[in-house]
Image (cartoon, rainbow, N blue to C red; front, side, top):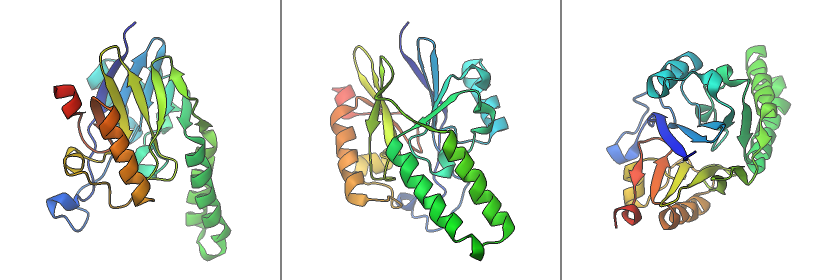
Length: 226
């Protein structure tokens, strides 16, 4: 069976500094992608709220979220995993480094709980439970779907490399934020490690024929158009 991929929902930024936006002007969400390889149906970055995501998924595929076997998050930033609630039956994957880094961040918040009210403390505890559901992603999720580390946007962020017969598709997450950032060779201003992010962006440019960015539609690269 041929490897298939499709964008379920095109993401957007709350503010895009390349559009001269200095404050948030819209609700942000990440691009959500479906990858199908054999029996595996992998949903990447389920960003929309669960009920909305389920409806959008059906519109784009004729399926329901119950068909998903695996979830992969390019980063554990909350916006990239907002739609996890209806996907508890699936395996949840991200990089081990991302899991460890985000868990330490939440633990530090929890240790400051005496300065938080009960509601804030409960939110942190719920987030910790969510992170515990994730498992370290293997080097290959399927024979044609490979883990591809792209650190910088967050410490342990990563994409998935789809090894098609005639092209290389990279679901890049926030290593490539939008098509305009890509065209200008710029990375997201909120990166955890800017130098690492710039190196990851260069890596994407060198390897990918097609890019699925973190907050935009599919980008065919110059390599693909040659």
